[in-house]
Amino acid sequence: MKNPLDSLWGTVISGFILTAVLWAIARAIVSHALGAGA
Amino acid sequence: MQGNLDWFFRWFHILAGIMWIGLLYFFNFVNVAAVKEATAAGEAGPISKYVVPRALFWFRWGAVVTWIFGAALLGNFNAGGTNGFVAAFTLQGAMAPIGFGAWLGTIMLLNVWGVIWPNQKKLLGFVPATDQEKAKARRRAFLASRTNTLLSIPMLFFMATGFTSQSQGIYH
Image (cartoon, rainbow over all chains, first blue to last red; front, side, top):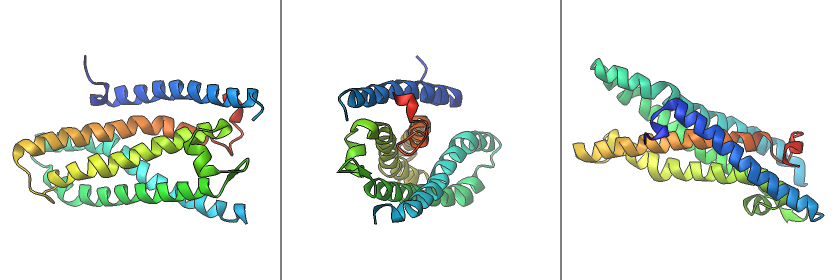
């Protein structure tokens, strides 16, 4: 499999995918904290 | 007292951040392709001699200054009784988004000083290296730089939507 980092667009698209994954995790942490009354 | 230096830390965090990430994007969006084309034409020498060392100087010190002012900005913030720096890096509640940004920025800083710069020093002839070592260094520096470009996308997302943003709703 080709390394996405070898392509500029592969790098950028991977960055957007990682953003979506981390956003979902951050959202879960914030929602959990709010649910716990934090 | 707490908020009085917020503007100053934020201002210099953004100024230095533009320097750092602007040069990161210059390397990845402009210089890689330019050097490749110039090398094929036998004209890459001046870029390596006059442009890259200067760009790398502002790049690596921009990274340090960005991190210091970002740390100061967080440390100056009271997150419900906890120091903002601690709350962010331990991903506490509403500080988790800016914490993700802070962690990504920290990983990127370590990448600059721990991988990119040591390998670039070999390529620029600041430290002795064989042709084989230079070929390895070139690949390592390239992949580390591309990794930082990748990480900059979520890093900037979390910086832009962090704890003082009105976009906080996207985390609820």
